Length: 159
Image 1 (cartoon, helix red, strand yellow):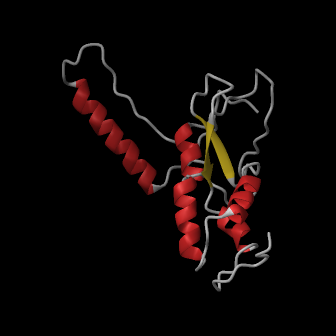
Image 2: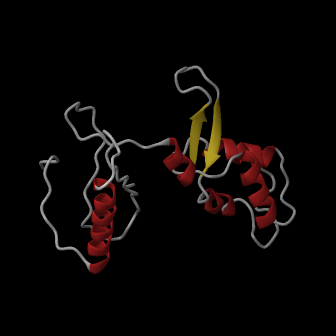
């Protein structure tokens, strides 16, 4: 697929209004002496998981000629918003009698290796030996549900 070209698409009324607005702003600045500055339009693209199969497929590759896709730290913090303190607070609210004990710490440490549940953010990305801080995806609650009873009693209390 050729990524330096795109096929034309019909615009809906909202898209037409946006283009009309951009054109009016451009015309406003075209009549002023602003030197060598140009108008810039910043468009953020956000990827969301949807049930439609029509989206473009993404594959991780080492091919230097492949189109680049960058995930920012903001993207990661949006997907993994909870740190240790927030996770612990959420669990205390979810399970009556929840204790911050060895059982909890063992389970939480086990989930640190699951990339769907936890992102380890480096304090210094330039240093491979830097310490990390874990951030958790809210879906981790489903995993804790397997070990604690939402009816307020612990399951497998001997663990």
